[in-house]
Amino acid sequence: MADTIFALSSGRPPAAISMIRLSGPQAHDAGTRIAGSLPEPRIAAVRELRDPISGELLDEALVLRFDSPASSTGEDVVEFHCHGGRAVVDAVLTALGSIEGLRAADPGEFTRRAFEKGRIDLTEAEGLADLIEAETESQRKAALALAEGGLRKQIEEWQARLLELSAEAERAIDYDEDDLATGPGAARECGKLAAEFRDWLHRPRIEPLKDGVRVVIAGPPNVGKSSLINAIAGSDRAIVTDAPGTTRDHIEVPLSLGGVPILLTDTAGLRDAQDKVEAIGVARAAALVEAADVLVWLGGAGAAPTHSRLIQVHPKADLLGQGNGFTGSVSVSSVSGEGIPALLARIGDLVATLLPGEGAIALNRRQAQRIGEAAEALEMAARAADCVLVAEGLREARSAFDRLTGRVGVEDLLDSLFSRFCLGK
Image: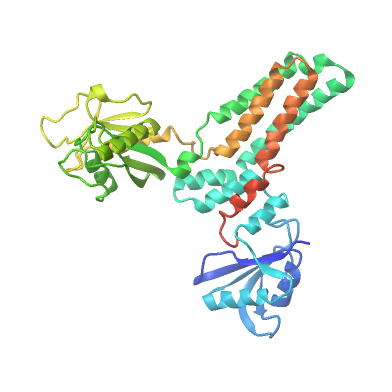
């Protein structure tokens, strides 16, 4: 029998209201011992909470009861909505801890039980973890799309189509009707489904939203890269001097641009450096230019690197006669602020091409890997000349989706995932 767990599931006190949650086979019995009696399921009622040993009044609280399996965890659940003072919360938690068979929950344990009871799948659990960690509006929306089951519903549709095709292939094997599963119709359906998976894999991913879009500012020494970083950040984050080669290593400044996290990166000036330390910095700068999601280039036209998302900048626009030979470059001045809003707008436009659309479902690396495995299996099935190979390809595709949703083969992932959750979630 599973333990009955309890925890404070709202913010740390003091607060106006604090919510304490119990889940497990003894939840209703423990709730009754504390509250005297429990209301009908899903009906809130006010109760006096008392110490189960001494009978001392602890608080007057709103109590809710949920019966298995119609609860957030799939188990019997009781919630105490108490006054949010530290002393009140500590007293109720201490009282619960005195009841035999109850224990304090581990971080993420309520959500893990919801997953184990089939209330949510692994994609929804990942969405909840991302939602807890969301720091920007775009992160919140993308995480909510997962947490509310957007990907789960799409996967269920795909799985239903895979089962249909699998049943057809198995029937062909049983009745030795090769043309039933290996004819143009079945191959076409496997190919169409694989192409649909590939379309999803080409969508913008969740990682830029979570980790930040890397915007690299690069160019030769003394063109104003560090000054531009400071002007955009609104503070002196990088050292600025007239001496070439001041920046020896890259400097990262995390910012939010229109609700999107970006990692603004200052780099060492690109040149043939004689100093050993500067040479290391230049090599790192070159690597960062290669890895940049968006490249802001301050330098001459002939030296601009080839990049799919390049913004050419004419720096020091406040100084007459300064130019870099670029047509259509953004003129900026780190001294007066001229052109900074236009530059940020250009950056924002390019960043938007890397991000999922409003309310769209964005895959993470693990999810994309599993869908890629399913696509490969279906492509094999589409090329197969034997119904047994078609059935095997379909089986492998279904297995990839089972790993995607957490039905099989994810034991090593679960501890890592649910440790990201706060206590009481």
